[in-house]
Image (cartoon, rainbow, N blue to C red; front, side, top):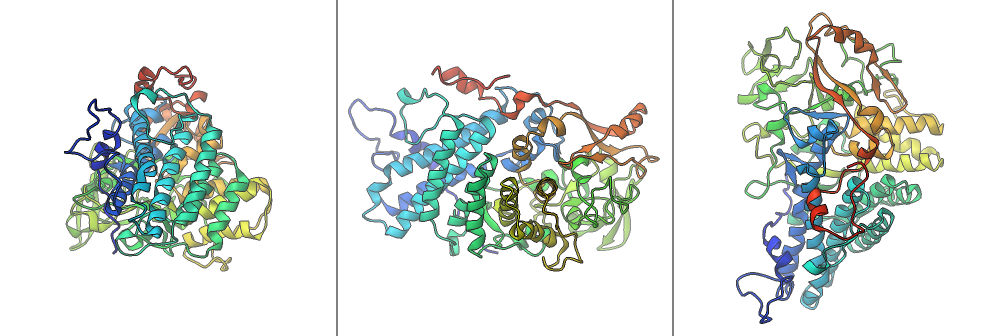
Length: 575
């Protein structure tokens, strides 16, 4: 397994601001780097761009930030009382830590990129031309990535494209459309400057395909359908990236650095690690069952006939995993799974309230305590996510080195399909993009249409429904869902109401009524209402979740409002 380049952190938190404070004697500090004396050698440029990557690794509560964002949507939920849970409940304010920290992380990253781009010419003569271009391309890509996240979460934000001193820091908010055009310009430069791939210790740096893919994503998020379609097709036509054959293994060490991964942040012990295994694993695997898929997520998987569970005769409430899209078993840890646990054991996974014991298969057959039932903090939904859980991380489950993918090829295919659908330019290439993703989930070739429910419709409305469901089930846990439900303007539908967890009454555990699903594959659980009359029938996770119209944007952090007195720097409405 090839591990990616190490990110050097800390150093540039000093460098970033060292040149901003004027010294009355015009003398540069001799004990620390600064913008006037740094950026003069090739090594310093490499260190500077490495530091600009470090903000990608922002984690709160031990998760990569994108994974935790899933818990502010309808597909995942976080059990501990955290900011993600508060946002899901609609209780966040301008003072919420997560709202402030993500803003700060991205603007700090932008500052590092600005400082590098402004000063790197000092080392141009001594730096190989190809390396100089690559570093500039990396900085432009990262700046675009950080800005893309900012406008997607907060809307209009200050556009800063150079290093600034304190006297210049009171800036107005720049229109989202203007920032978007700036992002496109940076990404176009990055596409021209970055290589297709890397080798050795440079694996993991931004590539030209990462810039193409992110351009396609941010264009899609902003309904620039023609730009999204063109950028994704540019990448597809290179024939460099491809889908990893095994969906489950894609999110393990076996699938790390595959051709499906377009841009990822690698973790490395002694530098930066992830505690995802501890937080998401089953209780019998020494985990906390802290971040879990929702029932609404699990009920969104189709049956193998290509129909949703409310329309398919193949669906059984007594065995909900039977006859379902194989990605459900590959992504969701549910009843009947054989799973791996502490000490090298394998055991039968069950959440049934009567199952106080479960079967251990190896190293010896025995009955053991089923902590997913007996522990008070076991999965509240009755499901766990398998993604980014690898047996190799059981020993040091707070120090995972498994890379987290920010962008992968399946997204590019679905972005291309959605953009073409919205343009109503539906042809064989659109169906092929959709079916490549669906066929991989079934473990078959796209042409084996008798072995999976291939998409054949050319109706715009029907395909819009398909692509939205595909994004929901394909990317659960990967950080895209919050952005999707906002841009589709369905967050007020999917987020409001009771968040049902697992059935706690044994008599209804396998006899729950079917929900109905709308065109966005959003389940309606009004059929559960009569069951609420019996206290204890369900583990209620949130009651209720509330999403108001102003929640389509996050608030500007109060700490920024307090210090920035520019009349053009105003709070988002409703906060």
